[in-house]
Image (tube, rainbow over all chains, first blue to last red; front, side, top):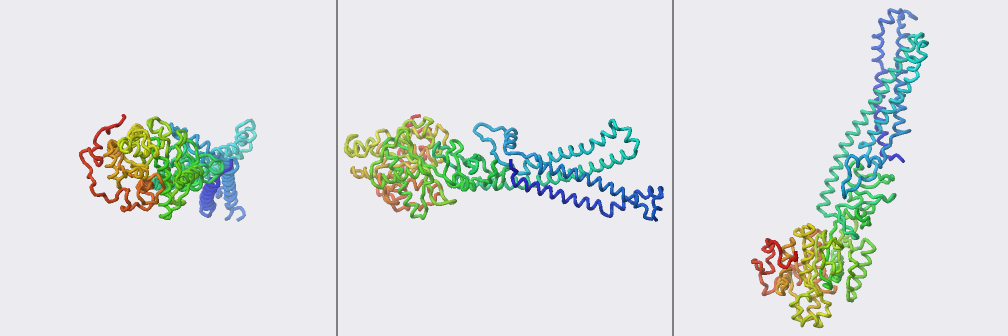
Amino acid sequence: MTTPPSVIAWRSVTAALTLLILLFVFLGFAGYGPLTVLHQVTEPAYHALHLDRIGG
Amino acid sequence: VNGYYYFTYPVAAVIGCALTFGVALFAVALARALVVAPDLIAPAADQAEQAKARPVGPGEFAPDLCWPLYPFRQSRADVARAERNMALNNAAAWRAPVRSFFGDAMPFWWVVFPVPILIIVFLALASLASWCCYLVYALVTTVSAGVSRAVLGATAALLCAAERARRSRVRTDAACMRCFHVTPWPAYRCPACRRLHHDVRPGRLGVLFRRCACGTRLPTMASRAAWRVTPVCKRCKEELAPGAGAVRDIRVPVFGDISAGKSRFLYASLSSLIASAARAGLDVSFPDQHSQEQAEFGLGVIRSRRETAKTSPNGQVSLTVRLGRGRPSELVHLFDAAGEHFRRARRPDALRFLDDGQGLVYVLDPFSIESVRKGLGGANAPEVVAAHAAAGDPELTYDEVASRLRDTGVPASRGRLAVVVSKADLLRRAGLSLPDGSDEIAQWLWDHDVHNLVMSARRDFAEARFYAVASQEMPPGAPHDPGAPLRWLLTTHGVRLPADSDGPPGQPGASRPAGWRAPHRSGSGPGAGDAGRSHGRHAGASS
């Protein structure tokens, strides 16, 4: 049975909206802020392991 | 100084990979749910669900086989299918590691600790990301479907209200000429698959357009569908005139005794109506072959002044005339049946058309009135024989029909009745003349002992007018014009025809002749309609 064009259109719109929202979320997540937080959280660990001295 | 990057970057990369894997899990699930293997809610499945939720009652039709609008059903199916696919994808992603870490090969993997932990954390992150993506999709779909349902529902309700108001104002009921079924709107046949759509109102199947199960796009609302697809009677499946259910629809049954002149009146009045419409600049056409042939035959008989053949008791005359063209046109249905039927009018038979008439015409043969006959020299007088006088009592036929209407619960008190004294030209030729004007004709009937009919007609109907008409074609407005009763009934129902002026004699509203007797309010005269209405039964009623 052929899918009606209106169903294809509705699905395209909802999928596109979802994609747009996810794009915003992941771009924000991969941005500067999260990396800084990660750095601060892991600083005691890499200091204790002397990792901050490697390649310095 | 920058050594921490040796720790941070790999961790960030692993997290990024986990997130990407999660997004991929979601993308695959969504693609399968929407494109590759969707759960498509077909019209039959939706119809079955609707019928299950609201069982179809007697006399009702199952919901039409159409594709439901996406927000009303398919959106839920898509979200559910995406969720199922998500669960399957995640299960597939976890299956091998779980078997390895917690199955038979468990000892080996825990030797290489912390690899299993890293893989489990990686998969947990990926799963979390995939379900977050799904949550976003589900939220987007659910919220947009909810908002769309609200907007579409409100629009559909507004359109339905507008259509209902128009239907009530214009009186767009659709009448079938085959089974005489009258319905607020007919069914409409899909031009591609010939499937019937019984309810084309805006709703969950479409607001402005709907899509038939076969894929054909059809307009919603009777006022639009009636012009683009074929209207069909819901009861007998007969095709109706284009525009049925969208245009004004007026039904005028003609009844009377055998040989009263019903068929002749019908065609003579049709001829006059055609002339009136031409004066008003209105097109007159016959929307179906049957009506066209009936009209051509009947008008031919009238215009050539030949005698009308007796209507067969097995056949009925029902013809449809379209006044005007296109959307502003009007459909007028005229009904006639052999007089034999009206002598047993209470039987639930072929006289079904009487029940839905918006205005009735009762044809009375003046030669069937006893006092008239006596005045002419008896039933065998040459004038009476030449007029093919009706043999029965004119009041009995009326009583039969009035009783039928009462018995079937038809609110005749809201309708109009034209009492037509036929063969006025023959009566004049016999040396008797009928007066002019409705009240005067009523008085004439009263004086000739047909007072029960006069009284009953005025009591049973909201308005009753009395006419004298010739048995021949007459120009509109002429004395004894057969078209006057029909024009009165049609114009009172909103048909745009030139109104009969007060001038022409023989018509209601004509100036009253000298010596006219004012109606008696005591119930003993023809104008006693209001007083008579308070009585329970009219005199002479057979039941």
